[in-house]
Length: 374
Image 1 (cartoon, rainbow, N blue to C red):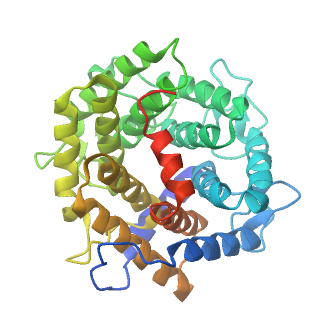
Image 2 (tube, rainbow, N blue to C red):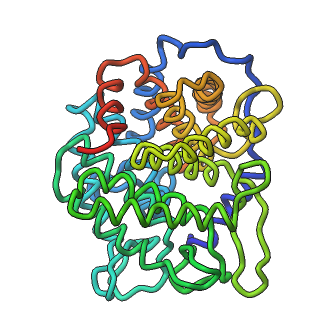
């Protein structure tokens, strides 16, 4: 399955995704949420991990590995799991990191990750796929202290930032060959967050990285933010047509970028924007369930943004949504109805993140991650 086919399958999942209705979540996460995170992750790892390749298989019984987009979510799942279960997952996390070199195209002028394992000299790289790797490698570095993760995160961000040009007044393209001639929020939002995450670890480049994040956020606000504060999908270069689909991960990444810019610059306008997005996020939920309407592959990033908003502002609505989604995902997982690995890994990631509110390990980790500088 190529990236285009994978996206079509994703859209099909978007249309068919329905959350099992649940009652509104309580004000605190259920006490067994950590056990649920462990249960779901162990099941995924046992069923999909290819021991010989140190990669995850695309489907049960398959020997070919997953697409890069899903690998980014799986890596973030393993990072979260390794925080609490280092003896079980840390070694596989490091092996997985090395195995992802099969996707890394070092034969081109500006190296980056291809959607599938490559022999080099490819030209099918997606800037959003690579941006997700920046974020999860930065988190992996924070956990493990492995300098090679930080190095690769910086190298990958260099590729992502190479997607910025003057067309449409700025912004990062979706694909290196400008497929569909579109610049997307999903490329620009995580690029801004990536700049801000790495700025903490690169004091020599901190000022410039923050400046680039401001540029990206300003462009995305001007071109893709709706009147309600939520973010639309993309803008087309030739026609200036805007795809107004409001996928959860678009607003999620911009909310995180605004929160991090407020922390990095002290500019209250960024905090105001983050609160504005968080205040409108209920529009992205199914009815009054507080559960996001999108499949987990998109919505898990909004849950992560909600948790960051709650940590930094105490926003009760954001916490309510995060807990409601974790509860719904576990119940959904129990039905066995979901077979796409990217959605399963997204569910596990959400369970770990919500559980970490209750664990000393989790609270300490995110305290360090949220710190202005390392």
